[in-house]
Amino acid sequence: MKTILISGGSGFVGQSLFNFFKNQNYDVNILSREILKDSKKLDEFIQNSDILINLSGANIINRWSEKYKKLLYKSRIDTTKTLVESIKRVEKKPKMFISTSAVGIYDNKSKYDENGSLGDDFLSKLCQDWEKEALKAKNTTTKVSVFRFGIVLGKSGGAFKKMITPFKLGLGGIIGNGKQHFSYIHIEDLLEAYKYIIKNEFDGIFNLTAPIPTTNYEFTKTLGKVLNRATIFTIPEFILKLIFSEGAKVLSDGQSAVPKKLLDLGFEFKYKNIEDSLKSLVK
Image (tube, rainbow, N blue to C red; front, side, top):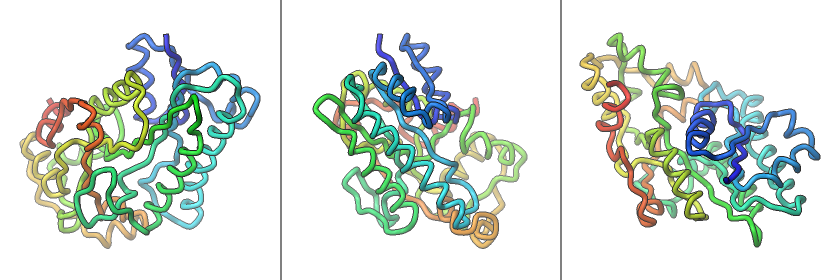
């Protein structure tokens, strides 16, 4: 039986992974903040794990004050550095280290696979530093994979759970002009992608996004259609900036990313387009 250790396991994706792999008869453990602060205990957990999954990081959808930007950075880079240092210290190293990143690493000028052009804003640079730190764990016995997430859509948490109620009330609407790219992945496909990479011990950088990206406008109109609700409202960008400051870019900008590496390796997506994804979540 393989043992999986998850850092940052209290969130929507972390809990979904925990339950998914438990049901697959894996031995799954969650790293607490207390253990992360205790190098001796951390080393014990890591050297007794086959797979280390790193999901740590403060919520990106928030108001980006200078203080909060430091928290976004620290919660990702410092935690990843702590995990990597432990991997380097222990004698029995995990077979795989799977760390997280985001499609926000790309600029928003085109549709990109994993070799796409990187951005130069705060979010992109944060993702770039995050990935560089994770890749330092690579050694003769530990393979490193980095998963660049799109927006993860699932019933039990994340962005979809927050937005479904206003849409059901007929209060949903596009953000800005709605033309911004919207790269997403259904939670079921995300879980299966983790399983696929672990089973086959693939390493490298992977976009975890549905094969067919969409836009904010198409997402909004499709969700309204499957709910049979009007989507007549528009959320102006200046309102988002008042609420989220620089963090509004996460909602008003967008990247178009495709999962070329997963597809090339033979991974089969269950939900390839936004309509199929949303129908499965609202039925």
